Image (cartoon, rainbow, N blue to C red; front, side):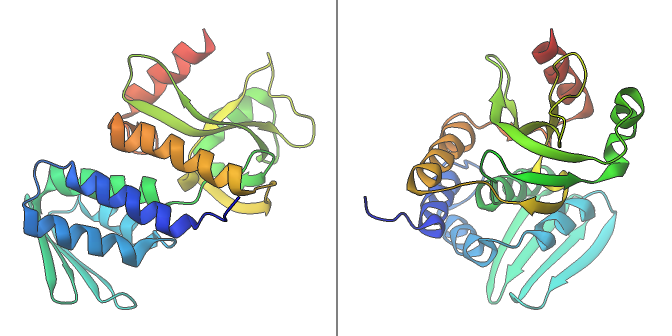
Amino acid sequence: MEEINKNDMKIMMWKDKVNSLGYLSDSTKCTGINFGGYYLEHSKFLYEILGGLEAGSMVLQDQKNGAKFEKQDNNCLLTVNTEQIELSKTNMKGFIESLITIMEDILPLGSIVDLKREYFANEILKNKVENIRMVITHRFLSKEGTDVYFPYAGVVYPTGMLGRGEVLYFTPGLIENVIHRGFEDVQETAYVSQMKREFIVENNMISCGFATKEKVEEFIRDRRN
């Protein structure tokens, strides 16, 4: 089977997603598609933009890629070299979240990761877990009738248990370190691309990493019942 280029698939998917966004003009869509090409692998600046959306007025710069983000009240301006995208706060949030979820790497099953401890204090105390080292056992978890999904779920390494047979749900943004990357081949690449396209492009779903606290809690509660 011919090797699949991950980045080519990401760009194709991003192009389809941008073209589906009704709040973008045709010229702005071209700029949006081009912008995605700068963030195929590195999303730190994109997360900084999301954090900056809650500020009153602010300016962020990514000198490496020639990008600049400016926010004044509810108006947001994203400049990449000589191209610009001007959107409301709400639309900019959706635009950046979609870009992150499409471009962000998804680890294979069997990968071992350390999670950021500060986000799981309650789980640690409840299950007496001293070190949040997890094995990824599930991916792309969703529930019929909802518009959110969890990219990952896993169990504690090395025991494989969390208590009552539960798994811990998490997102790429909560991973601190990748200790071991699981097996991957052409089939793995195709599967991840297919699931992202189905969830993000076709069904307009968002990762629980960007959902409201209430939606995330409801999702986990329903999955555990």
